[in-house]
Amino acid sequence: MTLPRPIPLSPRLRFFLSALLIGHLLAVIAPPLSFQTRGPLGQSPVVATVLAPVEGYSQAMYMDRGYAFFAPDPGPSHLIQAAITSKDGSRVETMFPDLDEQWPRLLYHRHFMLSEYLTEVYFPPGPPRELAKVDPIDAENWVRARARYEHVRQSIVGHLQRRYPGQDVAIRRVEHLIPDLVAFQQSPVALDDPRFYQVMLDVPVGTSSDGTGRGEDLIAPSRPPESVPPPPGAEQEATDAKPQPSLTDGAGLSMSRNSTESFRLALRVPR
Image (cartoon, rainbow, N blue to C red; front, top):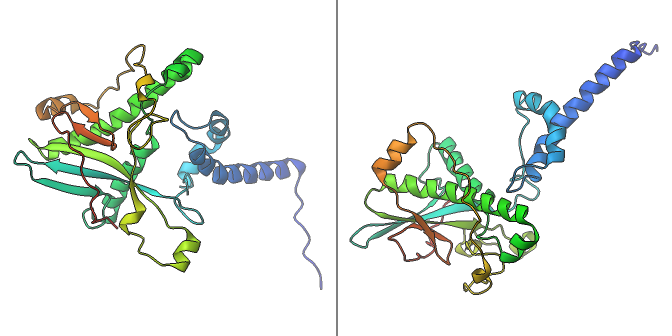
C-alpha cells in the first residue's frame, strides 16, 4: 500500500496558513472573553486590543457571542417588575420579559435583553466621601457610571408613562435565581417557584437591607454628569408626555415623583 505523498508547502505558505488558523482561533475566543471581562466602564483594554484585529471577521461569521447564559453555569436571570397605579388607587403589576405577554419569541428576546442590560449597567448610589478624597478620578467615574444607569432606568420609566398616560409608574429590578443542582435533585421544585425571585435593592454600598448604614456619608458629585443627547424626535415626544423626575426608595423602586408606595412581589411569575 502506497501512502499519499504530502503536499509540499513553502515556508511562506506555512506561515500564511498558520496566521489564518491563529486569527480564526482568536475570533472564536476573543468575543466571549470580551463579554466576560466587561464592566460598568466598558470592556477590558487588553481584551479590546486582542479583539480589534479580528472583530470584523468575528461579526461577519456571527461568532461574536458571549455564551454567558448557556451551560454549564448559566447563572441567574434578571427581570423588571412594573406597577402601574391609576388615580382611583387600582394597581396593575407586570413583570418582563414574559412569554405570555411578549410574542413572537423575538419580541420576548428584546425585552429579555432590555432587563439584562439594566442590571448590567447598574451602579449603586455614591460615591462615598472617603473615595472622593483618596481617588477623585475613580469617584468621578463612579458618578458617570451611576448617571448612565439612571438614564437607562428613567428611559424605561418614561416609556411606561407614555404607554399609560396619567398613571403612576414604578419599576424595580428582580433577580431570578437558579436552584443548586444537589438541592434540586434531593428536593425537586419548579424553576418558577416564588422563592427563587428576589428584589435587587438600590442602596449605597455598605447599607443593610433595612436601609441603615453609611448612606449619610455619600457626597454629591462635584459637577453634573455629562448629558446624553436624545435621539432625533425624542425631545418633542418627551415634552408631550411630560415625564416626571424619578426617585428610588429603599426597596429598589424607581418611580415617578408622585408615586411613593412600594409594591409587593407578585406571585405570578413569568416563564
